[in-house]
Amino acid sequence: MLRLAQEQRKLLAETVRDIANIAAGAMVFGQFLGTEMFSLSTAVGGLVLWVGFVSWAIILARGVKP
Image (cartoon, rainbow, N blue to C red; front, top):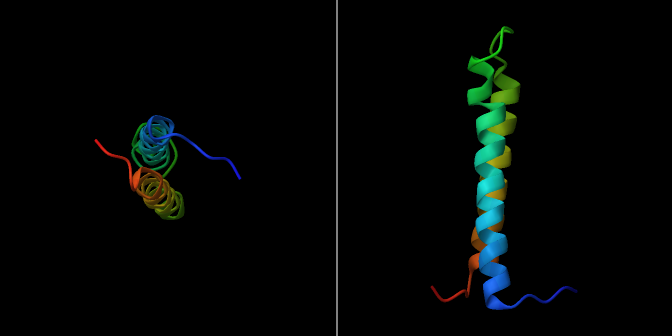
C-alpha cells in the first residue's frame, strides 16, 4: 500500500478536485458548446464523476492539517 506524507495527500486531494471540475465541465457544460443535442445521460454521468472525485478528495484530505 502506498503511504503518502501529509503534504503529498494534500496535493493529491487538490489535484483530484481539479479533475472533478474538469470532468463536470467537459461532460455537463461542454455539451452547450457542441452542435449535438443535450444528452441527459452524459450530464448525469458527469455529475456522478464529479461527486465521486470530490468524495475521493475529501477522503484523501481527511486528517490533513491546514
